[in-house]
Image 1 (spheres, rainbow, N blue to C red):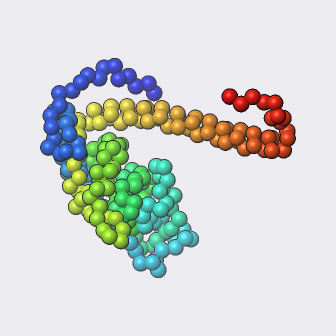
Image 2 (cartoon, rainbow, N blue to C red):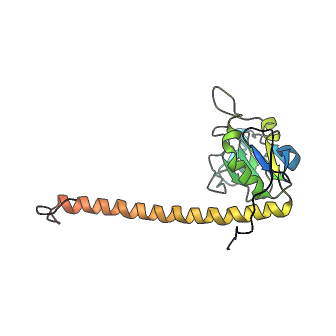
Image 3 (cartoon, rainbow, N blue to C red):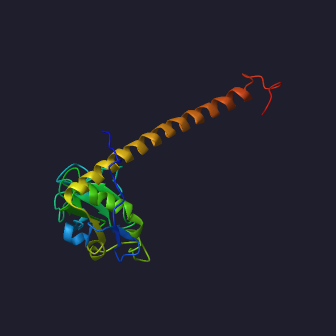
Length: 218
């Protein structure tokens, strides 16, 4: 999909009163996550009720099974206390604080996670949490391991435009990040090819398959 940014103009900005956000367009509403989503803090079942045999719901204790976007569960439980909904944001509340995935099915969630059910465009909240992930982490406490509380999440500030603009922002970011990811993929392929060339060059030089005696070195 082609996304044109030519029609974008510089908006009139005003200061939010939140240092780490700074200025936002005057038509954005500053609010708290608890007002634009439902937050469900995880709770772990008894270890006796957790299995690897596929009995019960897939269960996520924390972020260990997180993938790039979706988790791959290894555990199941027959006595789920808390569960995510389809298309919830799964947020790690224990080290590493701030890791995120999307709930592509119903999961039982342990105390290392919370699930966020947005009342706004899900991917807008997803991108907001990515954009301000370091600030979310800064609320974490604990000497043994870092953790954030449900109140920290509920009272995290978010600035929200109207629904149509949320969708436009999501569409723009999907497109631009897709471009960046394609560049990353190409760079990885080039790096892999350079590694293979490096290995082959060393092999051919040390085994005499290429004669380096009269080669010029720039």
